[in-house]
Image 1: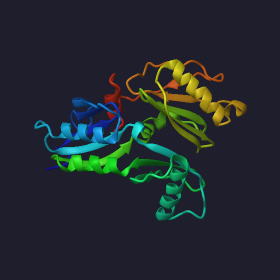
Image 2: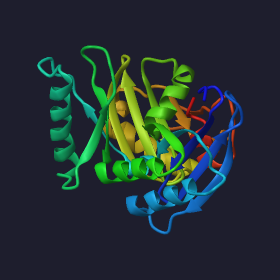
Image 3: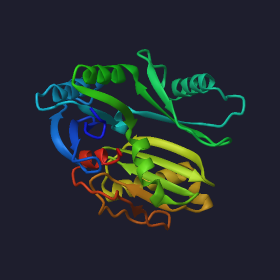
Length: 266
């Protein structure tokens, strides 16, 4: 079957819900196909929820992309080191930093390392191996083909980076119960933090103020601040350190946060 004719699905895996969305045509926006609530915010429950959705008889053949909520992803910035060049060396270096930051993971973690130009820090995302293994098995038992598993921060920033258009900025990705804050200076990553946080305006303003202090921005002067909150393009965050954050959305819109997260997949 031609890939152009295959159905395309996106599964958004979050701590409280798993959503399966189906694309309406090759370039159409994803439409809700089915969803399942998660009784607990654990990898085991999320895997079972996805497996249940994919096992439904109305799910036919097609391609599937999984978007992982940042609840299930750990992030670190890998400082540039000239002596660490080969992929195997970068993986070992990242593993050490993850263990130092989050503690040793007895179950193992898989680490994805972003590409950056020489001399720049790189974003590394770590996901529990048991979660990824379980998700892959759930897809393998269905009639769908797994295309990729994408951390939400990476998928979302890739889609909105054209709206940022600055070498110095703070980018806040605000899921309903977790936010990631990326800071860049001179076109290079400066800091990255993921934290449990609400997506209400005053909560985000407090988060931005705190991250500005931790990154030393309050003394240097605040850069532009950009906020992306899935399902809430009308969000207005109060001024922080003299800068009014700008909310940026996608070209397509969805009021449901999980469908909005699915929109990040091309």
